[in-house]
Amino acid sequence: MQQITLLGATGSIGKSTLDVLARHPQRYQVYALTANKQWQRLFDQCRQFQPRYAVLLDAAAAEQLQEQLQQAGLATEVLQGEAALEQVARAPEVDMVMAAIVGAAGLKPSLAAAQAGKRVLLANKEALVMSGGIFMHAVQDHGATLLPIDSEHNAIFQAMPSGGNGDLPSMGVRRILLTASGGPFRSADLASLAHVTPEQACAHPNWVMGRKISVDSATMMNKGLEVIEAHWLFNASADQIQVVIHPQSVIHSMVEYVDGSVLAQLGNPDMRTPIAYALAYPERIESGVSALDLFQVARLDFEAPDVQRFPCIALAYAALRAGGNAPAVLNAANEVAVAAFLERQLPYTAIAGVIEQTLARVTNTAVDTLEQVLAADALARQVAQEQITGKFATC
Image 1 (cartoon, one colour):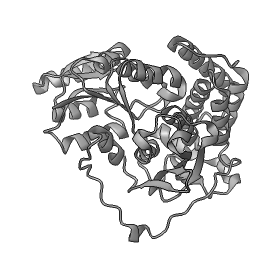
Image 2: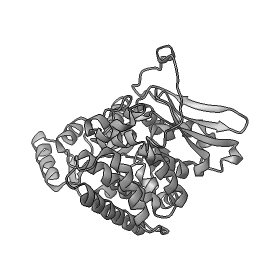
Image 3: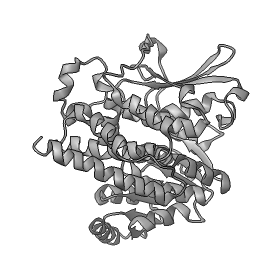
């Protein structure tokens, strides 16, 4: 029986993970569930899975959850705060950690799991974007196992020899083809983008996701972050990673080899597939995902991304090539800009501009420690917020 800590249990990845776990009660037991402040949903999950610990970042929510658990006669212990996230990620009883906290908030507990030598199921791409070198060294130095959960990187992992964490040319790999749906505005009139609402940006045509990642998919910053993530996961240079728009989201990514072969992983757009693959690796288990009907799919389309429509992709490539603190700055500025857009404080088309100006204003320096990463993150957030407050206060 394998013990699992689920960081970010109430989000879309967390709920999909619990769906897979519920199908295999003889293999997996939930050790800890964590959330930010959604104590009601976490209570329902605790009632079903009866973890040893439940962690909430919000103190008031933690008190509410503790009261409800006691009234229900459940033995789950409630912990509160950032340190508690790291505690349940490091716990010696834990075999694997699903790192599914969205954004920079997931960096510390994800890194703690790697430093404790766990099997880390990484859905939090920001951990690698912000601190790729530090994170990968922690995995190697502490004997952790890192398995990607993003459908694209999971597909690449499946199509690579031995997961592909070595030198690509020595494995006969020419390049990685990272697929993208193109989001809800792939074919929208460019002039209409100035009037995009949060509701429109969050209406993804293929995937069911949280609000922040849905906006990232609309701007294709999500794909830009995945380019940086692929760099660290597969030791690939920017020139060895190509983004390909594939509207059907059936091919989740491809690996091109020097002999002309292209290996692709296909499946219905359902995150339970990569989750189940990572949970049982190298075995395969039932995920609950329906079989792919190629006759119903009927066609597979591909196109190059339009940089004018999706300027965030170019910004991400530039940050990857610049190195140093640039990816952390990119990520922080994006998080601030997207949050402002969702609060209707920033136009959709201004998101990329805030990120570009933040990258220009924050001096690029080397980052060798977690403290330096967090300092760059904090400075970038300040610079991005100053731009929003100064230019778009009446938006």
